[in-house]
Length: 123
Image (cartoon, rainbow, N blue to C red; front, side, top):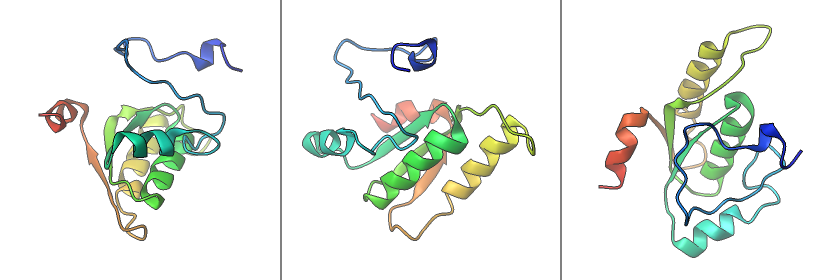
């Protein structure tokens, strides 16, 4: 539910006054949101993806971004999972890092990078 503890940004995340927040209600950050239009208006051509719930939100949003034509930098050590009955959290994360970077059918590709390499993208 919006406003609940689960809706809060992760502790330690550095938020700037001009940062834009887009509320989503499904694992797909593009579904029923203005995200795609906002990115287009800003001229964004590449995305950096990280977040919570690797197997749901990160996976679904990355796939949709690729389908919409955005190359994705998947921050390989900045998405999380609680795991499931079959495999643990680190296995879920490793699986998605490998799987999402293997998708080629959309044209644009996802590339896994470590969090400390992200800062060099802006340089």
